[in-house]
Length: 328
Image 1 (cartoon, rainbow, N blue to C red):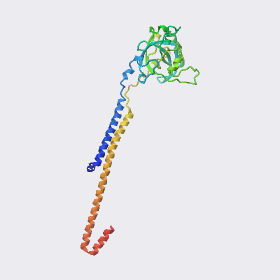
Image 2 (image 1 turned 180 degrees about the vertical axis):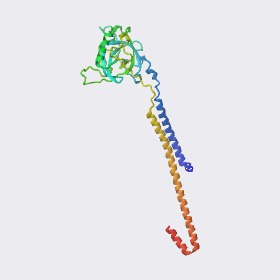
Image 3 (image 1 turned 120 degrees about the horizontal axis):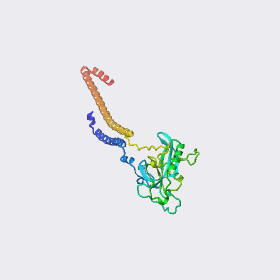
Image 4 (image 1 turned 120 degrees about the vertical axis):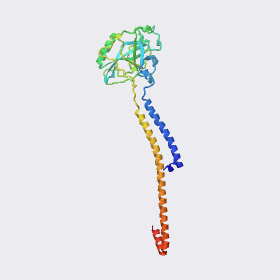
């Protein structure tokens, strides 16, 4: 068997198999490494628990990039009591309810004073007409009636907005913290009695319901992680703080990559097995050929001996022996 393995053609094939096995081994190691690497917390995991100024992640009129979604941010501004609405279909602890959503007029987002248009000639305008705004989810209610009652309560508590000319004076503005989320697509519900009902957190739909047009707005929304400041009297009865689902940072092994790594290991075994089977078949064929040659040689020797014996006994016996051999 070892002599057969040392044949040049099988040694050359073994060299090719080794090259293939090295490639399979690298692919298997890559899949295995990917399985454990993807299970580790991302390098920016700390960014999803540390609040940063909102202006570092998004600007008015710009889209929200994927790496900024779900991150906690801070912003300073005023909540407009005139633009409180309910949004249906909001889940909390497995129960479907309503969000109370408002408008935050952003006075400071962490990047300096925000640009504002000339408001000197605006009669009766508030800061809502001078500064950009962003929708904010304030709280969750189990029923639409509880959400409506909470809106009525908040409308009485929240002070009126300052005049537009005072947009740079942030006295009385709220310092809010929340999770930044990308805006959703509007949902059209033809079965609803109220055509103004809102079923999704779509900034483009919400801004069309605001009392005062905003010079610009954010294409995202905030989910406040503590409701409105306690200076407003806390959360109204029936309105709960929204449970913000944190980004999952747990160790989760990627089983698909593990299965791929196992497959490459199987391919390595199969490559060696195929080479071994080819060598073994060659060895068995050689053995069979050698065995056949030995049998033919033994038969020829027997015939020669029989001829010699027949020759010694006489011509007739020799003829009979030859005829017998021919029959065989």
